[in-house]
View 1: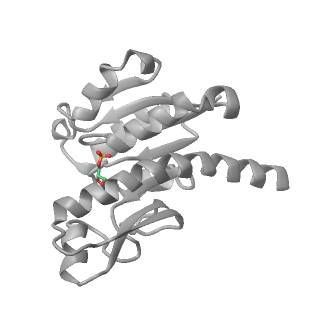
View 2: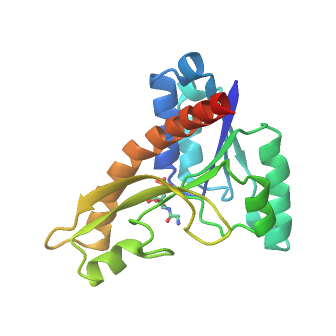
View 3: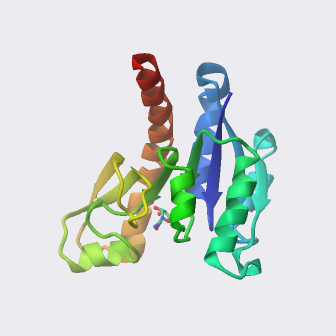
Length: 204
Ligand code: GAR
């Protein structure tokens, strides 16, 4: 069985989309894939409440590792790595995990660490992506699933979704339109990650 660990910081709607897809599409039976754990750096992340309130997903462990309890970014990342590695992950998924990761963390999971970012990368790395896209006069916005490298919001692009920016859009209305597409592409990108990996293994 291959293990997926998902990291969140907040609402966790992307995490929910992946957990839901895994359950509904029976990834365990069809692909030998399971979401083993969801770990939040924030104790009050509502995504944790969502997960715990759905008994059908009880096989997915939910955990908190509060970053405020650590003296440094390095110490937190080391502890997070130890926690994640208990699940022997084949893939670590950043799903609204709002932390900048240290190079040793990224290096440790190189090739098995992916993120979703709410813009059409390489445009609009960083924060406030929707307002910046509106202010720039863009006609389209979107989201990108990508491999994580030490350069923030860079790394090979695995999937993108495009939505129009319409007259009267605010950052909030645009964020909602983009988020609904994130929920479609992220589970698909996770599945595709493992299909591609299987093809590469067969070729070697
Ligand atoms: C999503 O829009 C995701 O793309 C974004 O945070 C939101 C999390 O929502 N991620 C980033 O901005 C990472 N730089 P969720 O907690 O409901 O999945």
